[in-house]
Amino acid sequence: MKVISVGEFKEKMAFFIERILKGEEFIVSYGRKKNKIFKISPISKSRQFKRKLGSLEGKATLVIGKDWKITDEELLKL
Image (tube, rainbow, N blue to C red):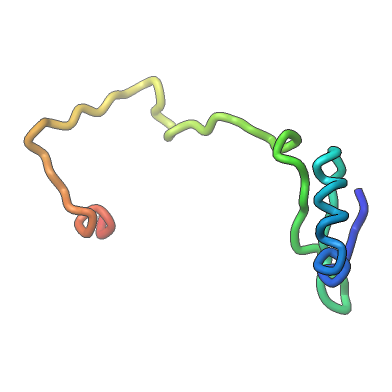
């Protein structure tokens, strides 16, 4: 996987997008120390997994009554 600088990516963005569409991946670095800040890859190569909704998934259920109401503000305070 090739490492490129932010400046190089900005300057040749169309070129890199074409290569990404062909399946290539790049790591973008920034600054004098060339810190690696992000990776660009095609979505088709992304890891996709189903996230469990808690440790009790499949072991417990939650039933909410029809008369139970909560505002967005109240929910955010929880």
